[in-house]
Image (cartoon, rainbow, N blue to C red; front, side, top):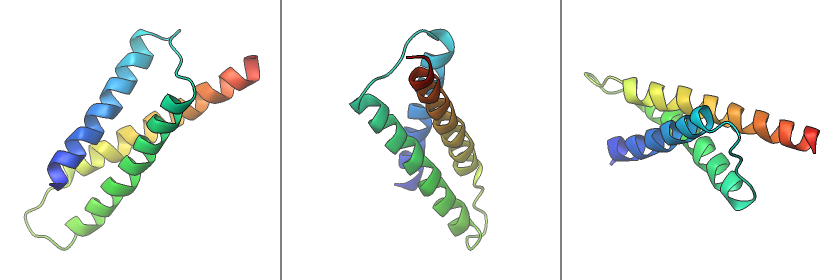
Length: 90
């Protein structure tokens, strides 16, 4: 269950980053911005919880949790930066 949730959150992060990198003129508006922001924040919280739980399990390698934590933080920062620029320019 944990692994599938992390894979879904990682896929959302990767698809968002690929969309932003290859379509830099593409902007998300309204509800979609809110959904992405919620997904990124949830990715940060969930992966941090799984990393803290990994301390108590022997043989568990939290690489996927670390990846999702880093990608969610980067995606959330990217989303906030683009929203700041969109508000600043218009």
